[in-house]
Image (cartoon, rainbow, N blue to C red; front, side, top):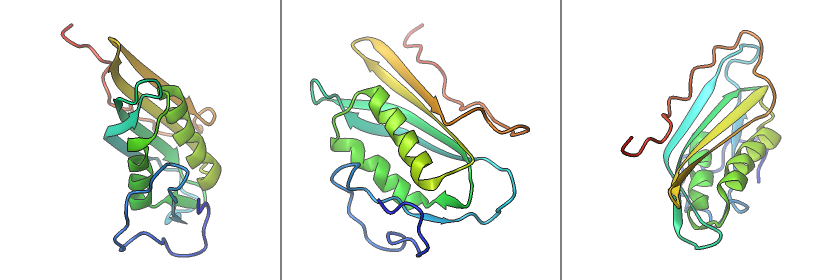
Length: 154
């Protein structure tokens, strides 16, 4: 984990292999280019994959991360590698979704963060997981995450 860093991102501009696990993944942070301005950053990962801890079969989700930056923002390549590191990681939907949100919140220390994990059906039941650090800041324009509930053929 690199956490808040005074150095330039270590992975940007470098050929970087996919980390072997989320614990091995290093997230890089850069200074917020608009400190003192309240704005929202959104990352969407529509093809997120992890493994079922019971069957080791792949689970798929559309992950949406919204945050209001504090002093730093997460560098997007390091976030992509972090999310990709879950491909061979066994974890329940709840643990994976909340764990991603909590790690980003703890390391980056944004003003506010929320994550939505929209998981495709397992055993015929879609599972959606939501976590946020606190109530959104007053006056924040907070768009819908834009992911429809799973409907199947309905």
